[in-house]
Length: 60
Image 1 (cartoon, one colour):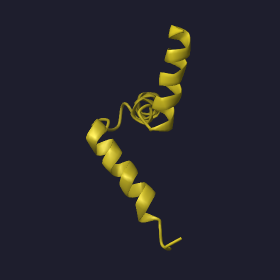
Image 2 (image 1 turned 90 degrees about the vertical axis):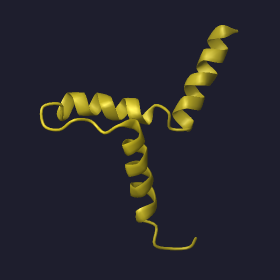
Image 3 (image 1 turned 120 degrees about the horizontal axis):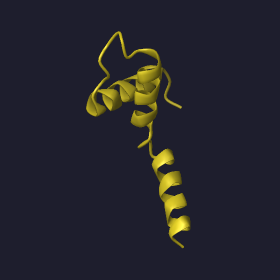
C-alpha cells in the first residue's frame, strides 16, 4: 500500500509542477553552474508563469 501511495505522490508532484524547480536545478548544475547563480524557487516560478502566458495572443 505504501508503494502505491508513493507512486501517487510522484505522479501528483509531476502533474502539478512541483518537480520543475528540481529539474531546473539539475540542468543549471550541469550546464550553467560556473556562470550565474540559480534562480530562487519564487523567481523560477514567476519566470515560468511569465514565459507560459506572455506568448498567448488569442482568446481561444
